[in-house]
Amino acid sequence: MRLFCVPYAGGSKGAYLKWSQYINPAIEIDAVEFKGRGGRFGEPFYNSFGEAVEDIYSYIKNKIENEEYAIYGHSMGAILAYELYYRIVADGRRKPRHIFFSGRHSPNVRSYMYVSHKMPDAEFMDRILALGGIPDDVSQSKEVLKFFLPILKNDIRILENYIYIGRNEKIQCNISVLNGTEDRIDPCRKVTWSDLCDKECKLYDFHGNHFFISSYLEDIAKIIESALLK
Image (cartoon, rainbow, N blue to C red):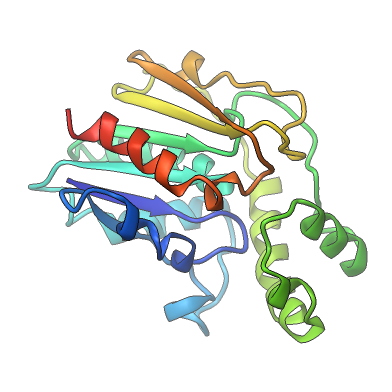
């Protein structure tokens, strides 16, 4: 069983680096790398959300032919996972066994953006840092923050420009929804992923901020194992 992990805005595959230490080896962690960072540093940023979906699909499409798999997406990665599912379906490929939507309300819920790429740089970074979960060696380094600023702003830009389009067919696999109870990005706690799914939907709340996934790796690993190793 392969688990494709889709990062959050500003993130890279490194966000899932430690996951294999906590999860059953029967589940292979396969983290997606976005353009313009990590091992793909120097590649141009995505022009649109659709381009990001297509890029992720091109990465996984040959890997899902003869193997069961699931998808985990956090924050922006959750919306990418949603759109990726329908890209897979459109191409007639094997559907995922399970999707884990983490740190994000469903795309059919209209809400304000906690941050905007149009904000002045200082205000933008203040809001990002207020979310928590960013290591001190990063948050306290002006040079590092300056390096990540264009990456973050572009990711937020494509997310702001994303337009949700309803589908005639709901998601045809089981899903799990994971959220932090102190998450500033979704303070209204509008968890409506079940409205978009025809199968089982389980909800999990964790006491923590938007980046609760960093503090609950063992618990999340158990949730994943329970869903995929039945």
